Image (cartoon, rainbow, N blue to C red; front, side, top):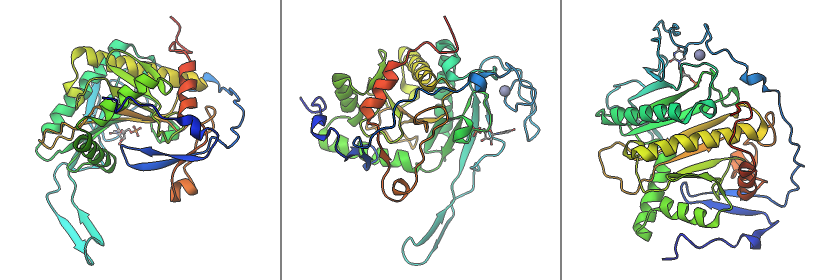
Length: 358
Ligand code: H2U
Ligand code: ZN
């Protein structure tokens, strides 16, 4: 079978404005390598954003502290999960639909759900990049357990695990933490992916992301790093400048189904990718990261292939952010630097954190 292994003759498009297809969302991205890229400035910021105390008495996530709504955090020593005090979703709002106009002109439906916060570490000053692989492994266990427990709730059909890092991404607190929003319906992005994965499986009798991982491992030019269980690539269709896609090498539908070695592999690749990000502009690299996996609606969903998206906004330095405006907001997203160049830059920085030696 050659499908999934064949490369792409990108030379034909060298220096030419072109668009690339995202098979997961079935959207197109405009690529403009013809635009003279501003010279690489290698600009670095001070490491000021890393000078944080190990414990901050004013932090609502540090062990032993009181949260905004009065709850007190336990003196936790590894991870800590709690129900979000300002949850965007309520656990049971019933089954109510409101409709007006003809068809779906005015349509609203109740949405029940659960929002949780996951503290990755008691240390206020750490990040995934600077935790040990063992400590990140503990976070992977918590994510797997939360995916299972929330997915088992009768109303919950989808569990979205994510991390928002950095003030630039609207993250309110540097304390290492992520969130989980479990919902009654499948949110837009995973729903689009689900439809594409399903159609691909039907048409090709194989998994889109298994084929894609194989293709990228063969081509190599968009691979950032890999281990036995996972590969990180700048996807061919990347929208954000240094966007990456972390793919399980085995066809596995969700985080809970990962075997012990694969869980360790996930912890390892998370550390390596976040370290490369920090090293790129010598800053605590902001991003939104999240896992896409099998819905928890009780169906088999053999089409699903567990993966993570890292969507970071930085473009040229710790201070220069990519804005999605104008044509991008009203037409299609656009990038100048190709995915191949972004991958090369991420490959070019080391996996030893610039602030952590040895
Ligand atoms: P960020 O990841 O966007 O910083 O959000 C942290 C979450 O913590 C946010 O969703 C919650 C906020 O609602 N939070 C609490 O649950 N309790 C608090 O005391 C403050 C913040
Ligand atoms: Zn803290």
